[in-house]
Structure formats: C-alpha cells, structure tokens
Length: 398
Image (cartoon, rainbow, N blue to C red):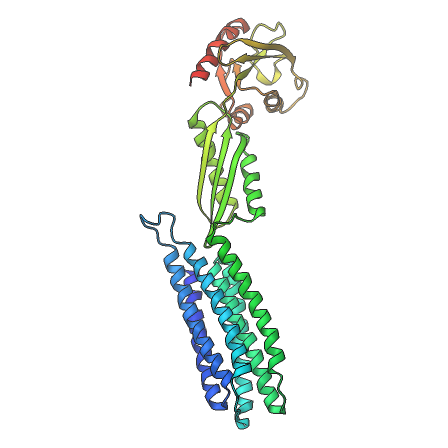
C-alpha cells in the first residue's frame, strides 16, 4: 500500500472515531448540535472512502483510458467541495432551526469532548495536508481541508455549550463567521478541481521553467508551441520544437535528451510528447582551418592561423559569400580549440572540414551538442571548395 493510500485509510479511521465521540456526547448532553455534527462527520467517512477509492482507481490504465484515470482524484475533490458546502448548511440549520435542550449536568463532559475532537481534527488535518502537498495529491489536500471544517463546526458547538453554561446565546454570530470560512475553503477546492477537469494550463512558473530547460539545449533552434495540463497530481506536457541538424534521427536524439531533463527537474510528470523537426535552411555555412598560405589545411585546429568560411545556397550549390578570417584565439595558451569552436558557432557554421577528427576532444563535444557536421577532409582548399557544392546538394535532398 502506497503512502497516499495509507493516509486515506487513516482518514477513514479518524472520522469514525469523531462520529463515535460526537454521537455519544450528543445523546449524553442532549445537544442537538452535537448530534447534527456527528451526522456531518459521518459524511466525512463517506468522503474519505471516496478519496481512497479515487486514489486507487486513478492509477489504472486501460484501452479505453490510455492516459490513466488521474482526474478521478480531481473529481473526488469536486465532490469534497460539495460536502464542505453541505457542512456549512448543516451548521447553520443546527444553530438557527433546531431547538437545544441541554442537560447542564453533562455540559462539562460535552465541552471536554468537543475540545478533544478539535485537537484530533487540527493535528490530523495538518498532517494530511502536509502529506498531500508532499505527494502532490489534490484529493488528500481537499480531504484535509474538509476535515478542518469539522474543527470550525466544533467551535460553533463549543460556543453554544459555553453560552448554555452561562445562560448566553452566542451561536448565531459564531455560526456566520464559521460558515464564511467554510464557503471560502469550499470555493477554493471547487475552483482548483474545475480548472483541472477542464484542462486548464499548468501554472505559469512551471511552464516557463520547462521552456527554459528546452531552450538551454544548444541543438534547439526554436519552440513552435508548448502546452501543459494537470491530471490529478500528475503533469502532462507537450512541445513542438525545431532542432539544428539535417536529419530526423538527430532531432529524435535531441527530443529524448530534453524529455529526460524535464523529468529530472520537474516533479510528477506522467506524460511528455515532443514533436520535433530538423531546421530547414536555404543556405549552409562551412568552415575550413588553413595554414598561413590560405591553401593547405591546418592540422592543429585550435592553432590554425586562418579559417575559411563559405556560405552556399542549398538548392543549387551556388556560393553566396566567401571570406578568410584570422584565428582570434591563436595567441592564447589554453582552450583554443573550444573557444574557436564556440566562435564558429556564433558565425552560424553548419559544417566543419578538418584533416583530423575531434573524437574525445573539446571541439568535438561543442560541435556535437550544436548539431554541426564534422567532415574529415584530405587535400587542399581547392579540393574542398569543389566538394562543398556536392555535400550541400546532398544535404538538401536528404
């Protein structure tokens, strides 16, 4: 049995104890209000049984309900809010419309018993509320707030008992204050339950955090759409993203990495659906490390004196621009390879040609994370210029 189910079972036991205490004290003291409150606590037993059933049912999945029945918990919360409103009505009815014939000899026992029920409801509702928030269970939270209304009702009854002890009638004023609090609690639960049942969006803070996680991935170009909704204590998230690179395979790898990050940082995520597509570019920019003569390829990538950058139109392989750039980090002692790699990314490079690969090296990780193709090339710049058009035309077809 999981934690939420255990707490639901505890709630049933606590409410049965409250029904017994209030019922016994009501008959003993002749307090109609106490008897009415015992009847009200019996509705709490029904509510707690419903909560436990909702917790068990909500986890089941079937062909008809492939996303599970998590919203059963929110439906239970909706029912709990109705019971809270009913509790307010019962309190008003008991105080204003039922005549009390108190047995003064047993008033002290009744008041002590009411104080005991107030202590029980206070500590248990506080425990259940904390556990409900920790577990992310809306039905446990609703049940805790529902049980807390018992304490408010007990305040009204205690006021009536004290008033009867001193010959005063303070029930009406206290009842109005309690009913207002009950209506406020019930309305809050009602609104939260209806929002989830109508698929309202997840709170802004969570959605903004998810957006940040997605955009932190260097291979993500843009987000076309981002949606999220709650279902019971769980979150369902859907995103439509555009990734760098030229293949669906690479876009799939990016989407899986993003899904893993979201699940790691955002609690209670049940389902993530990421639509992905590779970026479609009309042009492609390539970079080649060169020696001082600007013709031969430089073997040491980070120490290359020059970099040749060329932008080619993908559809026909036509050169749109060509330029030689002096290595801005050639004079630095450490980290030249990574720094020049990051600089090339800022220039919008899609492909890097080099006489040696970057496997296990800094530039290799930078280019891999950014979706930049690395091609091990032979020959000189003239040979590469001739292959640029062929490579980009092939990329356009793929």
